[in-house]
Structure formats: structure tokens, C-alpha cells
View 1 (cartoon, rainbow, N blue to C red):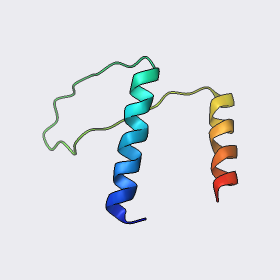
View 2: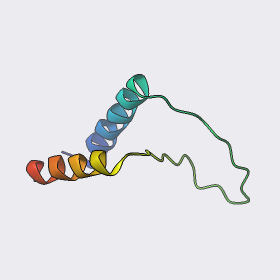
View 3: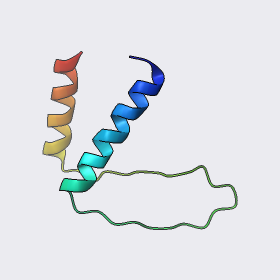
Length: 58
């Protein structure tokens, strides 16, 4: 998978998360903005599940 294909895959995953999860948008005024920053808040149980799934995919 090329870098561009990986980027598109991640964008699609984020779009799917936005469709199924509550979210808010905040703006922060910065002198040198770096772009969009996405923070996904999860419980420890959810994080453990993500890590487990990532290890299975390796």
C-alpha cells in the first residue's frame, strides 16, 4: 500500500468514526498553526481492545 493509499484509508476510518461517535469541534488561535489535530478520548478498556486488535493485525 502506498503512502497516499494509507492516508486515504486513515481518512476513511476517521470519517466512519465521526458518523458513529459523538464529537465536538474546537478552534484554537495559534501563531504558527500545524493543521488539524484529532484527539479520540477512550476508556482504558477501549484502548486495551485497540492494542489487542493492532497486535493481531501485525
